[in-house]
Image (cartoon, rainbow, N blue to C red; front, side, top):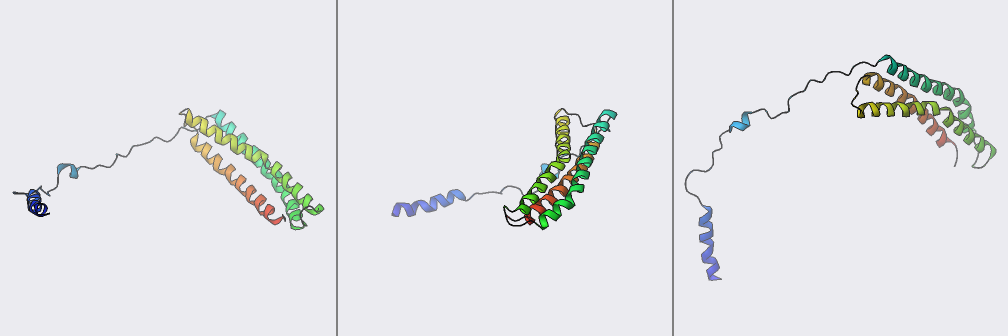
Length: 161
């Protein structure tokens, strides 16, 4: 144990150094700007006439689905409001109208799906022409589909069971 105490001063002496320690002055690398340079990205080219026609067709199909959905919605709302207990005739009628609403929105959801696929395929191919128009159409159709889904969710929650 005595030997161990004799070694401690020797070990501590090894930690002490003579002379000046490292400089704390600013090094040249600290003066350099390490941020990544801002790259200028050209906006995507506008859609050609064929792509515009395809986008317009998808929007028209989604709007057709929205009109059919909106025409059936009041009848479905009335049925949901008067739905009786699970299994009753009024409950079955409300469920059938809810299914019909889902069918009426199919053109809107399929148009959105096709548009999303079109966007993904064009990006995969490195073709960004028309991306502005595609994204605008995607937002427009997505909004229709979200409104439809909200209405269906609201009615589904209203029907017992």
